[in-house]
Amino acid sequence: IVEPVGDSFLKLAEREKSRSTISIDPNVRPTVTPDIQDWRSRFDAFLPHADIVKASDEDLGVAYGAGADIAALVARWHRAGPRLVLVTHGGKGAAAYLRGHEPVFVPGRAVAVVDTVGAGDTFHAAMLAYRVIGATPSDLTTAWTALARRYFSDELSLIAFPTEPTNNLWSWDNFVGLMPLPVPTAIYSEIMAMSTSRNALRASADNRGALA
Image (cartoon, rainbow, N blue to C red; front, side, top):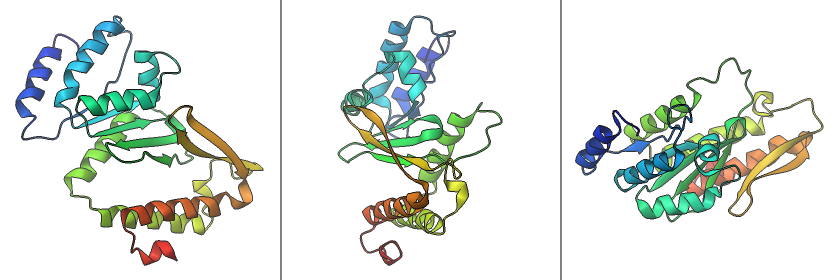
C-alpha cells in the first residue's frame, strides 16, 4: 500500500470492487514504511474496497502499538467495509471475525519450525483458495468433525507439549485478548474434541457425526 505502487493498487481495488473479492494483508514493515501514521492513512483508504483483511498480531503491534485492542480494531474495520477479518497469532492459532457473528478461534498445531518466511502468505492463500472452491457449511462441519475425531483418537501431533503435565486451551476475550487456560494434558484431547465438535454443530446443527 506504499509508493511507488500504493496509489495504483488503490485504484485497482476501487475499479474491481464490484466484481472481485478483495483481500488485503497489512504486512507492516517499519524498514519499508517508517512513517506509521502515513501507513495507517493509506491502509484506511483501502478498507472501503476490501472484503477481507488478514493480519498478524505482530502487524497490529507494529501498526497500532503493543497491546493494541484487537477487538476494537476489528470492529472499526467491519464498519469501514471488510466483512471478514482474520488475525493470526503465530503458534497459538488464528481468530476469525465475521461481521455480525461471534469470533471463532482455532488453536495452532505443534510443528518443528524450520523457517517462518511465507507462513502468513500460505495461510492467506489457503483461505482464499478455500473460498474459490466454494466451501459450504457442509464443508466446514465436515472439516471440524474430522479434526474432532483426531482429537478423540488422542493424536499426539495435535498437542503442543504432550510430555508436559498441562497444556493451554486458548480463548478470545474482547477486553483481554487471547487468554490461556492450563488444563491437564491427560484430558486435553477430550476437551478439544468437544470444542471442535461444537464448532462442527455451529456450521451444521444436524451433523450426527459431531453429536456422536
